[in-house]
Image (tube, rainbow, N blue to C red; front, side, top):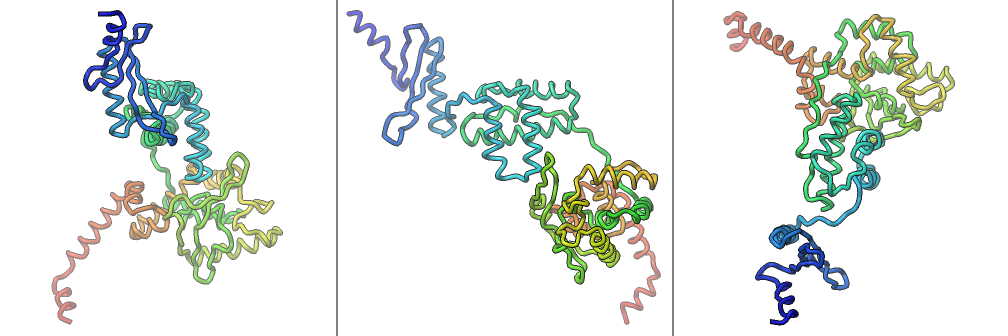
Length: 392
């Protein structure tokens, strides 16, 4: 047998092996056709291994992925490059400006500095677990790290759908447990004390709305006079206003259910009338916003908290709660007054009643006691009087 014949046998493929051959450097290579280009040219993928047995295993896996549609595209992108592209071209068009700002902050300040240089295709569960450990070491709260985890999972899930990677490594990693944060709410007496102290503040009507409707801070800032039906005693929530990096941003409400109509009391309508007169006296007659700053723009969150909300709490000797806790206060007061949870959910703009009952489960025990007392009262009354009523 000639040398040439021996070489041909050396490179000859076995049955079902595909294109397999030994390279001049001693490694083995295998090729498989994965499709054709628009011009009809074959598109091939090559894998390498130290031995023929190992390269045949890789070839089998490659062929299986090609047949099942799980074969990923080759990519040299790093995690940082992919995340920035995902933020700009996928996430940004679909989320609110404030949410996008939070996503970008998490990507640039938390994720990229630690694992941004890793090749996307090489990203492993160990890399991600190391990321969370690093963030904990830096003193970040578990809730902040969990937010980074959620963003990373969304981005990597998209990478799988785009076939940049064949599996999401974040699925195999758990973020740090977030400790339960007790909700701070004002009881009825504290709420009255807060409103009494706020009476002399130019934003009294805003606080009255917050406690009686449960509107979010951004929804209150985004309220315009055209959204209020004074005669019908109702208002419409159709936008939110926030300042992001010093720039005013107007967004749609947080969810579809957040776009809602809320009935208000005569007391609230009267307060809004008085507030409008005060805005006219300030020279803001042509202002669209119900609660503007002196310049006619929606209030900045920091100014509202620093110059109005926190001083009122302090003067009334109340707990140092967050502004968002006024929303929780409104919900708790409504539920404890026996208002149907479905109505409470609609006023708050929750997607479902289940969310309302889950968030405000701390109110349920007292509601159950009230229900038990009412049933006891109903069933323990005189039988004769009930029969008389029925016969009548």
